[in-house]
Image 1 (tube, rainbow, N blue to C red):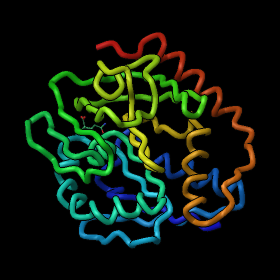
Image 2: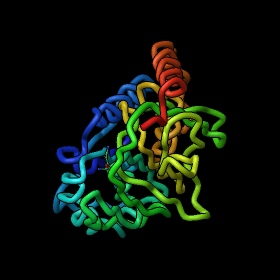
Image 3: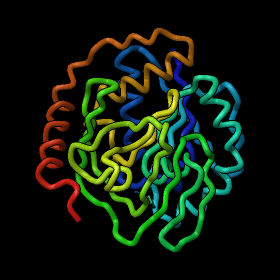
Image 4: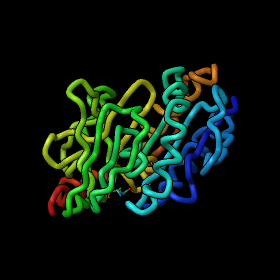
Length: 245
Ligand code: GLN
């Protein structure tokens, strides 16, 4: 199958090697005989309705978010319709914040979001930095990564978090939750990049994208020995030093 990926603002939102997540999607698709077809969707670009199986957006400093936020807000209804029609979406950190209603940054400026995820974010002076470990009971798995954000994300009461924080700060350093899930859209603060050390999640999102592409969603298991070791090291680091200012 050809999996069509829409990479939003790759030249603006790409800190902590977030672009590496695309490389993981590409390698894991190729290993199963599928092909990843990645197109950049940037400033002034339209969102091709029904033509994207998986959207991706990375993280960025407040400055970069401010540069793209209004253009992204102009794509809001097309992106919401695409997800409501079954497209998959992975959003990391600054990109995750802009999938909510708004992001009020450290300077107090309110960046509009696309209102896809039931949440809003307000930055505070002190940044939340460090290793993170999550328990994703909906998948019977854990996620490990690295966070660095000033934003405190507040989920609506009926929102589904991506995971429960075992170690680290997570959405706001208070609620005990991290990220958000809505249909086949996933938002998280976890950088690293996220996917090399969490292969099960890469496959989960790929299966969602394949379902949208009308393909077989079964993915043959891969050896993943190195990935499991990377996860274990990251998880141990989070347990020993995550969530401390
Ligand atoms: N600028 C946002 C914040 O500080 C997001 C940072 C990021 O993407 N790592 O919260």
